[in-house]
Image (cartoon, rainbow, N blue to C red):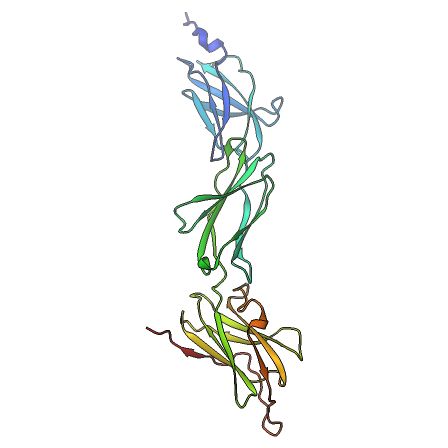
Length: 318
């Protein structure tokens, strides 16, 4: 004579719940442990009515479903199985998976400003906010901003004290009290420190201009000199100079072909690669102006303006 099955194998599981995991992708299922059962059969569905799939055969009183798509709703039901005989299904429970973290994050310096633009693509439906965190060393983090849902951009502004500094960023989305995982860490450097343009002077019998400045950036790859004049009101690039690799050094460059018998206005900036540049120095070209009274001797050999002329370096004083 066979032994009768325990009564609990023919009864539904009690306290069957589904809860979204916080900070990582997954849904946790819990229930009151069915003492004496062989295992708990769990099924999952995308709509809660049809297409049920057997998802797990679990012991104990919990199961974590990590095979979920972020921000997607899943439905579950479960039953205990003992000796090959299954009890009735529980009521259907559901949970909305952990919200999607932002994707395609980028950090880039704004040319001419001490600003780092942080941009991303928001793919989390139903989020309530986006959290942006910043670090100065990639290890210690502080919340920089809590942004409205569907935000895709943030401009992090700095003073000149942070020029050429590297910053680190990470993001996560929030849906009510549930947090997405963090994105990967992304970093970039603030625009290079602007040089300090001290003065311009006339040389070569008043037909050339010598520009003096101090190098303040540890990471520039070169300098650009721009000029406009009374004869040519549009600013134009007149020299691209190599880096000095000498922070604090005084530098000088000679403009061999300024507009003669006209006021010449100069601006200089440090550049780093093709897409990063310091603010202009000076901010307005009127602050670095010189009148060039003489033109080159027309009988002498014309001077060709070199795009990569040498610069004179005066090392910083000890």
